[in-house]
Image (tube, rainbow, N blue to C red):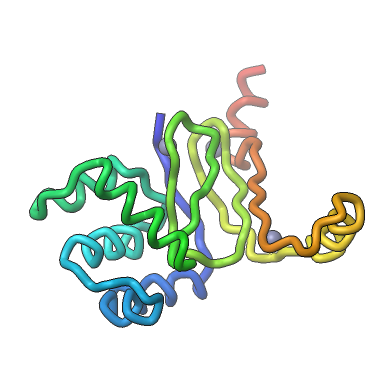
Length: 159
Ligand SMILES: [Zn+2]
Ligand SMILES: [Zn+2]
Ligand SMILES: [Zn+2]
């Protein structure tokens, strides 16, 4: 199961288009060596409105010889440099997207993803620092699962 469609913010769109038009600059700025393969992987992420899987990347880059392990290593390297982040959609595989701090609301029925750019978790982070004794909390990721309006209406109608 991997039927996804997304409703994303304008800011997110601009960022993706920026990366698409200057993939070399994005890689260089992040301190990643520019190769055809890396540019192709980054472009696949930037071109997709939804978070992508390694399979999606392989499908979009058949013109270059990439395999699953190579793509995985590239994504890990990108992640270390802060270029991409993993999104947990609770599928049995990982999804990736360009880094930008936001959360997602995900419909468990149809796969609709809505970006939630509002984030009020600073107070919670401070509490967690106190409770855990951690020196700092570097990041958090949080997704919300439920039924979208369309699927909610349908399920009410059949009840
Ligand atoms: Zn999936
Ligand atoms: Zn839905
Ligand atoms: Zn947040």
